[in-house]
Amino acid sequence: MALQDIDRRQAIGLIGAAAAAVAITPGTAAAAAPTPPQMAMWRDPGCGCCSAWAQRVEAAFGTKLPVTDSNDMPALKTKHGVPEDLRSCHTALIGGYVIEGHVPPADIWRLIATRPAGVKGLAVPGMPMGSPGMDFAHAPNQPFKVFAFGASRSVFAAHG
Image 1 (cartoon, rainbow, N blue to C red):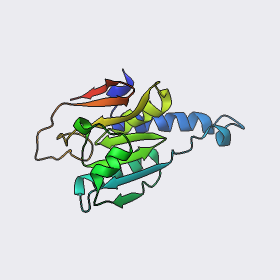
Image 2: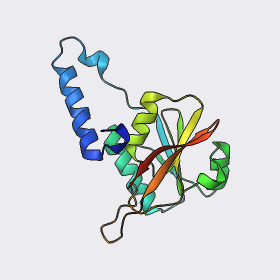
Image 3: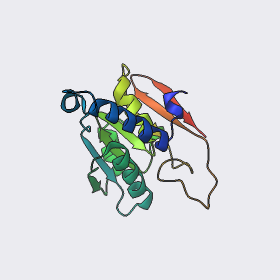
């Protein structure tokens, strides 16, 4: 199973298993416990799907994601180097990377763990149904891609 194919429940199970293994190994629990990365998110005021995505990230990382409402999101996206064709409704900085739109938390974890050369961030352009925060019971899921951007651009993960 590829890491990009892991859903939230599987990721939580893997993290729980790893935590249990560390906890039963004498003298290593404190040294091995991962520190949540520095995180912050900006969104258009009142965007509900952005709040839903933030809750998913908080659950996956086990820490609070500070959210700031901004009336000038285009300037913020330009400042952080988000290509215009990859833009979405919210922008986050997590673990030193720019995260644009409804990127699944498992993909963010993989980015932080692998730290690929030349990658500035990940983006899910637009607001595809079925992506984290856009997964509604009444709407059919759409396949979507997560793009890595920076020195070049590539598909980091595909979902659906």
